Length: 368
Image (tube, rainbow, N blue to C red):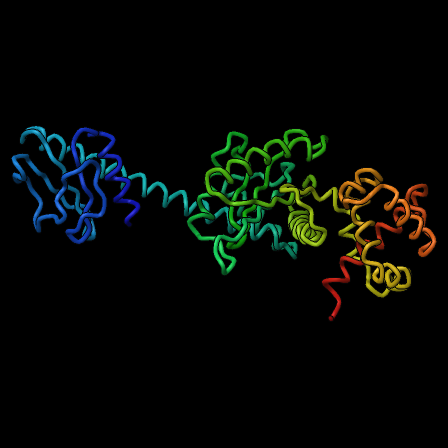
């Protein structure tokens, strides 16, 4: 409620910049525009004389009141009428905000249903619910899942911040009438963005839009955003599967320390496959090589740098702060110990990549 009355006070101050005014709560001055406002408000509203000037007070709601100085009684009456109009406009805007918030809650509910479809009845019911809200679920879309960084020590994002970011996303020029934006939980927001040309790669259509949006969120709310983006969705039944894949992909991003703010599911196909292969099968083919690599932490670090630098020796050496010959020495050791030649054989490079990814997965799935 304080924010509402501060908005009335600030609007009145902008409308009457030459007249000192003050906002009071429980008759005590909270904030003033200009100087000379009394520390306490009178118990009743009205116009009185203070230091040779007319001082007017009017009540707002719930113990709040606003006072201001005027040159004469006519001006005081005009300013009181202006204040009443401002008060009414702010209240109307607040009611509209509540209505928009209720509509937004309906979209959030729809999104949560879309992302948890299990049976044909679920699909039919959700399709009807979407149609009642004006959304055509046959349009091609992609899911953009925004994860907001925690704002406090308990790892939470305030509800006000979450709704502010949702409103900011919905206000973007590239958001159309068929785009769905809503909260998934206390720190995640989903955008189901329609695609004008589903035959084009999602990255080329979405990346520029999301880059500018993430920058705006950081500038206005000082929140770091991580975004996971899926592939093209053409059927309502695919939303739940795509959503789970994006969440898995964001987990992969954390696991492999990807520093980028925007992550596309097409870039993490191999990493995500690791989670879907039974560990017994991976152990059967990779455990011996994995044990060798785990006993050589420098070589594991080198493998990670190699893949981060797209197998470029010079870039890898620069990342590791070593000479390129050191990198080549380590690669030769890998060739001898693991019988893999990642620089010259595609199959060996793929095996080493799978081996490295599995080592990362084992770090979080191991009982120890």
